[in-house]
Image 1 (tube, rainbow, N blue to C red):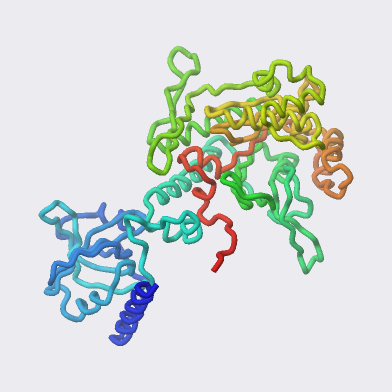
Image 2 (cartoon, rainbow, N blue to C red):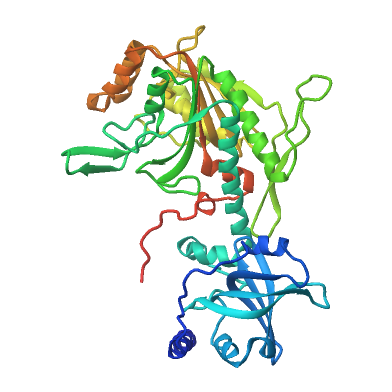
Length: 498
């Protein structure tokens, strides 16, 4: 602690020394030739250019100095020499530390080792760092500190920066993918009087001027379907959702979802769409052109594999995204666990759960018991992509019933790497059936019914397919991250304890 306090005191002393020389330690705007990557691209020996960035390395050669400047796009080496800069600027440079921001102007040359370098002729202080950065090679070792001080994690952890660079590219490419297929990006309310579209506990708030109790949305679905009623045929939204529930390596109370709706389509078309999207994103991140079916017309695609690694870099699992992806009905997958499952009585099913080691509660309905078996013995054990189709209607109250078996609904649930990545429905557009399903879901809490949504359905909604896709989980899948906190810049954390 004494050493840390001494370092802080030294930086404060340098700050005061700069101010005593009439130098502002927190400078104004500085015109550059672009980002550091762009400055490097403009390299022509003898060319004069301006660059700005954070000092991340310093090699003192006596009367000359080699310094690395960095920004989010890369690094550039600069060369400072007392003869070229003069004593005043060299004194100012002597009051700088690793982590400080400077702007420089200079001429390009190439060192004997072949390193493009900017020979500085003028220098301006742009921002003094009053605290030292974590040591580059060790960074932040404590995982919670990495999440809490994400800005330092990004500065010192190349892997972390790479993950978030990929996330940015994923979101940008999702927009392009849907727009190229005629979908329109829309925005729907985050503050909702009746939170709907999912079974989840919302965050609640109050609007003072209207005297109105509101909730943060748990899903945008019911508003997006209103747009289908209003004549839109292809819509999507990249949205923030909020659920006042538990936190785990796969759950954060605030998360990002893609939802898309396509009039006159069904769940099968939506499954094709999401399969194409995810493979397209994986190929984009690998720098590959989108794959196409082979010339024989079998629909087979070239291999596309994603490796997940542990902290030491060892491969823990390999996910094969080669198309086409497997599709299987929910009941058939349960029968793969126990062929006689649907012939058992309720008591026999509960006994089998005990034998399987699947935890259930006494008050669970039969379909909930079956769902527990599915989650533990099918979902969590599935690594390669699997579309689970035709689920029990009790699980998905907003989906269309199957024409051949009205106990099922026309849906898919896409599972990859042991977790749900995307649900997709043939949407229910019958307002009478929809009201009945929502009443069954609400039980005695009929105030939870969104009457405005039901009113919209009564004006007529076309048949449609819809999908949801968790962007956080998708990023985990495509980057190999093991925790949702590794792909959210600022995850929700408990208050720091002193």
